[in-house]
Image (cartoon, rainbow, N blue to C red):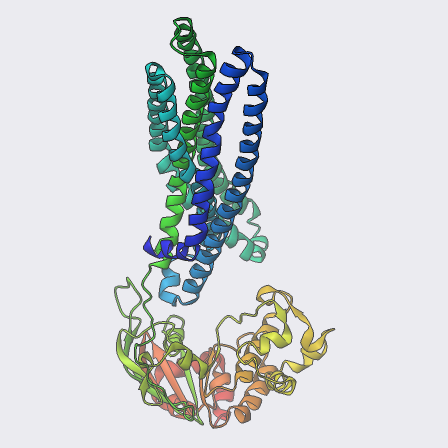
Amino acid sequence: MTKLLKYLKPYTWPIIFLLVLTIGQVVANLSLPDYTAHIINEGIVGGNSNAIYHYGLIMLLIALGGGILTVGAGYFSARVGTGFAKDIRDGVFEKIEGFSLVEFNKFSTASLITRSTNDIQQIQMVVIMLLRLALMAPFMGVIAIIKAYGIAPSMTWIMAVAVVTLIVIIAIIFSIALPRFKKLQKLVDRLNLVTREILTGLRVIRAYGKEKYEENKFRDSNKELTDVNLFVNRLMTILQPVMMLIMSITSIAIVWLGAHQIDMGNIQIGDMLAFMQYAMQAIFAFLMISIIFIMVPRAAVSAERIAEVLESEQVIRDPKDPVKVSRLGGRVEFKNVSFSYAGAEEPVLHDISFAAVPGETTAIVGSTGSGKSTVINLIPRFYDVTEGEILVDGTDVRKMTQNDLRSRIGYVSQKALLFSGTVKENITYGSHDATDSDVEHAALVAQASDFVEGLDGKLESHIAQAGANISGGQKQRLAIARALAKKPEIYIFDDSFSALDFKTDAALRMALESETKGKTVIIVAQRISTIINAEKIIVLESGKIVGIGTHAELMKSSPVYQEIASSQLSQKELAGIK
């Protein structure tokens, strides 16, 4: 929670100024009943019309001043509340951006979206109300009780009974509502998760005719959330009529007892009315406090969820004294690397050792689940090794800053991801200083020029979110062009040619051969034809290296590689490859 409170520090002076305005507003409101008593006692009962005009004018000026103070207090509370929420939102987003894949596995994407939007909105609303009501209500309630006691001490017990009754009711509602508020946020998470899953997988849902099934799943989540919301709202609706009942009974009791006091000559009519106004202000103050108590539990749950994100320890962090490595190499070396996912019973990788050197293509093949993508993810430190070390130009990647390490790498993921924007913006995503000729050259090498030229706007053509308006092969080619435009020392292709036809694949590999000359190229591939000419092929099985060599060498020495190759290529094709 301390990390949340630090975001309030920039608003210290606005809060102090708000406190001053609030005190002025309360003083103005609490002074009006005194003048009401003067008007009735001296003006109406005493028959002094001048007193009516005199005190009436003072009341008018006080009301005007109180109105101005109220507007000012509202402005500053809104400014602090919205600014505080904005700063938290920035902080949460910055924190999430620094998350490794380990943290993303801990928090679901749907939950992070809910925390960044709905939870922060809850905090913003409560902060605004706290600044307006929490500063004003206690001060107003205490002063109103003191002033009422000064007018008629014998009737103050009525206010005490009303306030105690109010506190008991609030406590009961609070104890029932709090568990529901905690459940409510989890149900919002769940609904977001289901909605996101359905919208993302809409094509598959339609292909398998599962619309009704998904509708029912959404309806169940929606109904559960609605039921809890209805319960909480129904609980809250009890409060208002109860409050009105307490205030009405209190007014009747004051009039009844006040009439007897007037009859006995203990107080005047104006004093009784002033006492009643102070009693209503005191009860209203506690009513405002009750509203705060109702809203705070839900905001407290949201605050805990936000704090959980802000206070989560990042597994992958930059070293305190990073090593600066020259940009002239690109050699990647694995030394006895083993890796286990958090909570896994067995390591995914076992004692992996190999070197990928500049000027050569290093390919990694293996069956599904053999650990190919995990090996690739360890190089840019998406995960950190459990044992051993990974060296880039002789330096352990954990001794380099993440920015320095990743600036050397042109990474093309297994699932090509594009961002909403133009074709040019996507290609220059990792190299903002790239010229138009650099972009065109990258597109040409990536075999993307043909379809880009066919678009209405060419390089300025719009790409929808996640590249929804182009095909899978086109997305892969633009993703490859993005890596090429960066001109890194190390190229990593994680099964990045799977959506390409054989003709485009062959043309791309030929163009890449000259483009990446002198650079380190690491390719994960399913197709043997994609990596058949690689200088070094690493064969993985169950997280272990079971073969290293060229295609020809592995065809003689590695049964696993022979099995993969023979499943894709005919004996005639294999015989024709030297």
